[in-house]
Amino acid sequence: MSGSARIWAVCVAASAALAIAGAYIPGAIWLQYLFKPATTLLIAAMVLREGAGADPRYRRAIFVGLLLSTAGDAFLMLPGDWFVFGLGSFLCAHLAYLVGLCRRARPFAAAWPFLAYAAIAAAVMSVLWPHLPNELRIPVIVYVAVLAAMAAQAAAVWRKRAGAAGAAAAIGGACFVLSDATLAIDRFAVPFAAAQGLVLVSYWAAQWWIGRSATLARD
Image (spheres, rainbow, N blue to C red):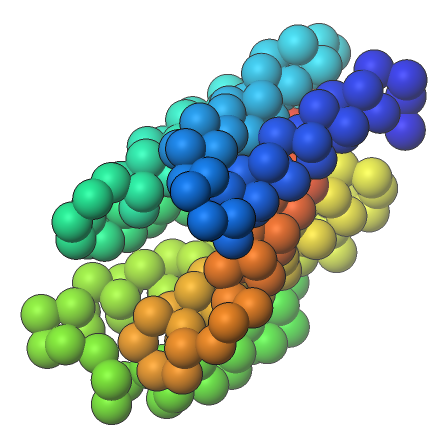
């Protein structure tokens, strides 16, 4: 990792730590309101500043996905129930990532990641299904399918184009599945105290590695 990449990593980690602290320290929710979107925007800024020489179409798609993710961050923090709007924002973010990843390798370039993530998605849905409100069942199915396809395509890119960029994207996709599965299970099925911390740590790990892949990808 280059010196500048280390600086970005430290800044992102510090911002993420402040956002997570805001979720657990009484009276410090303002930290989360400030640093949750700021952390994702820092990763987007890294993609812009550190991506010189990288595949421009892939870099552009990842940058758009990060901006859409920031909108999702904001919706999920707002007072009241903005869950569907947050879900829609992250759905669009995953579609942007998927478009970018399909430029790195043809869709379904390797079969095993799609089979593996389909099995994971089915397992998560089997846990969630009895607890989902009827009006959310179709949106959640669509979201899980797109998320699993994005993570699987990231792994397929790594399989077909071995290298640091492919590995980073594959790690990011896996972390996103972990983050969103944890969030959904905590929200709808089995709430647990450590969920928010685990969700946020894995979420920003996902965004960091996907963003990092955009700075490393070459034509």
